[in-house]
Amino acid sequence: MATNAMPRTLDSAAREALAERLRFYRDLGLMDFYRRDVEPLALDSQPEPASGALAAPETQLAEQVLAPASPLQSAPGAPEQLVNFYGEEDAIKTRKNFSVPAIGAVVPAEERATALQILRDEIGDCTRCPLHTGRNHLVFGDGSPTARLLFVGEGPGADEDAQGLPFVGRAGQLLNNMIAAMGLKREECYIANVVKCRPPGNRTPDPEEAHTCSPFLFRQIDVIRPQVLVALGATAATYLLGARQPLAGLRGRVHAFRGMSLIVTYHPAYLLRDPRQKKEAWADLQIAMKELGLQRPQAG
Image (cartoon, rainbow, N blue to C red):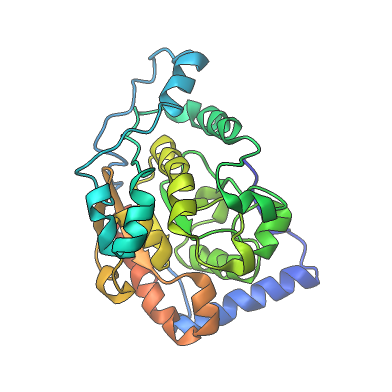
C-alpha cells in the first residue's frame, strides 16, 4: 500500500510541514510529549489463527473478501431505520438497494494486503454510481493493512482525486499532524472514505452514492479489523453508525461497531475553517488513544 512518508532532509516543504505541526501542537496547548510503556490491549475479541496454521488458498481468501452483501435487518442503518437519518422521501429512494455486508471471516494478518488488493480489483474501474463520470482517480485507501487505528472520512477532494490517495491536501496535512500528536505515524494507520470518487464541488455524497460505495468500505474494515475506528465528520458517522445526529450527540464516547470501537470527531476540513474546535477534536482523539492503550501526552 502507498504511504506518504516525510522526507528526511529539511527542505522548504519539510520545514513548512514541521512548522504547521508545531502550530497544531500550540493550538492544542501542548508543549512536551512523553510516552510510557503500557499494558498491551487485546486487538480483537476474535483470536488470530495460530502462527503455525496454514494460510488459506487465495481462492478461498477471495471468496471471503468478495462474499456478496447480505441485508442485516437488525444492523444499524437497516432499511427500516433509513428514515431516521434521511427523512421519509430519501429513505424510500434508497430502501430498494440498501444492504449491510455481513461481518466477514477473520483474515490472517499476513494475508490482509492480498485481501485488500482482491477487493480493489473487484471494484475495478467502477461505474456503479454517477460519481465515476467526474473523477480522475478512484481513491481506494491508504496505509497499513494491519493497522490498529483506521480513519474514515467523507470522500475525496480535488487533491485526492488528482493523486488517487486519501487526505493528501491541507486537510490531509492536518490529519497527519493529529496522528503525530497521538504518537503514531500515518503509515501505521489506515485511511479510507465513505465514497471512493470525488463528489462534484466536494458536496456531501447522495444517499444512493454512499449506499452503493459503503459496502466496500465495510469490507475494507472487516479485512483490516482495526481495534479503533475514528469517524471524521458527520457523514462518516452517519454511514457507519446508521444514525444522523448532531455531532455533539455522537462525540465524547465509544460506540460499538462490528466488534470494534468507534470514536466520532470533527473532519479536519472543518477544523481548518474553525481552528477553535481543535481542542475538542484532541479530546476525542484521546479517547481513541485510551482504547488503543497509548499514553496521553503531558503538557509541560
